Image 1 (cartoon, rainbow, N blue to C red):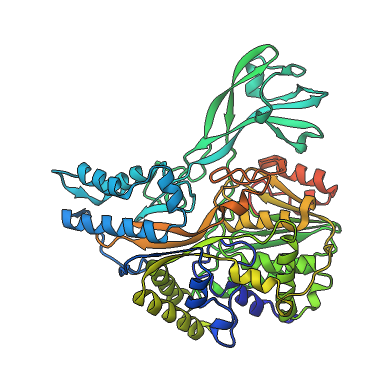
Image 2: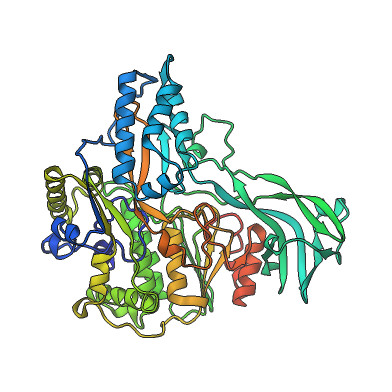
Length: 571
């Protein structure tokens, strides 16, 4: 296996927004031959559509183009923006029907906005707030956002862990306080007292020993968005927000109001950084992002090298007893890198596989992990607006590459088809992949057991989102109980994906809208608790306790030296 780039490109090719797809969702192309051999053409998609609804063609703006910001717009301009917003929601959003079930009515939305600005100037900043308020409560999709300049608002609440300084030990069917921090000791809580509260406030915390639980609460928090955190002019935003609250806890026959607070997350990285350390028994790898920069970016070559090292770690560390994958504050990107990593980790002597053999084994692995549950269905929206934005994104991210000419043919066909007969198509995103996975010429039956037989420990936190959560899900699907999730709950940003940016023509307010729904698939995972809540870890831990937890889980004391600073950052 000389290089992974060809296979990785096959997986990545039409993942235009590099958005949340799971496992092999984006495997639909090759750099040789006509695109119809690999990607579903318009006629194939229409013949296999779940639903087709006629609509009109509207030209959309290029959201990447420079524009002059205006502070106010006219009533006529407002009408144009409202018409475009309603058009986009109705024809591009995979969660539109569910939003309507929660009370979204586009005619009422327009009327409410008109009434708000009746007899007054229409300030763009105020319009941003009005639209935000109109959609709040109706959108339950963490990817969906409204953006204006640096301001970004996501419509799904974030739920984070608030930790106490009290630990309890299970004794039979009851729990006794085993350790008390300074704050709780001051209010009279003592070791040996009986905990009489709800078990949902107890978190398995092995850093302190077997059968030890830490008292805390998962509760709603409105955290600053990524863009807000990096807006230097706003001194009201705390880049590393620690939030505090009180929690009523019954201990020793009395209800105490104790202080609970969230842990400080590690740095968010805008560039892709890879780390690798090993002991005799364990390998530690970290990746800050799954999102590559544009192809002409000065960071692209370095990023590709880091992704290559990450993918090859699957074969490099097959014989280790423990592999630790640190994905804290990894906000996601493309799933194709994880696909290669898992295939190389699973297959025996995977370092000797050719690119073609690797691809066939990946399809075989996909078939195997869904043998019992059945191949999943992922409704995807194709409409005049989605084919336009994907064409724009393709021009931006793929111009100058080997794949560009063939991809251009694909998009020209789709634009021509939608202009001729505009419609909103709901199509199973997995239809082509599922067909390939059950075709004898496109798959290889993989072994029943993985070559890697050790523990796969994945570290996550509240900033681990999207493709990182897809990584967690597929690790569980492939490796079962050997895949151990460690840390805090993840972001909860995976039930919708394939996110596209759309800009309103007059106010230039931007919406990021998901074209694909994955909700039915992820709801089957026991650790998944929904948008905003994310995946709950098998073992809870944070901060200074992470290293001790890893030593306990692996039995590898050498980790204390190799990753001694894991509390503060990716290693």
